Length: 149
Image (tube, rainbow, N blue to C red):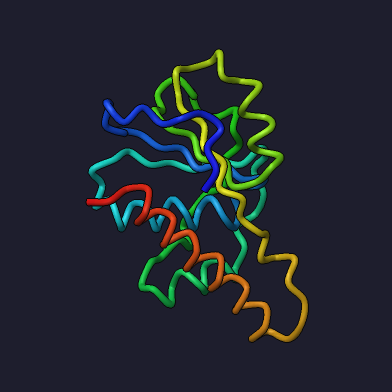
């Protein structure tokens, strides 16, 4: 994990926003995994630079972990108030670059967790779903490392 700004360890994180490009794959997975890990002790939300359509492979990969994201409605960054978040985690370079320009909109810490887009995977259905599982598992590890409870 690389950090764009050093986290303030003297203040407990109370709200986290995960951002990717379309809020259709990576950020909804991260939101759901973080909600499960943090047991709702932290307010967690996710958005994309634009609102795409929820990816069915994401739904399937999360269902394997007994997490239902099928009712997730993708949202665009413009639909949230950045000033209510302590921590913004950008999952794509595009979202990191965009969010870094908005730092004056809130006193949040920005972290960048480069996360590959599993929808770029090629091959048969099993090979494609494997790429989603890898992203899911990687996000779960990063969340557990970042938010130890």
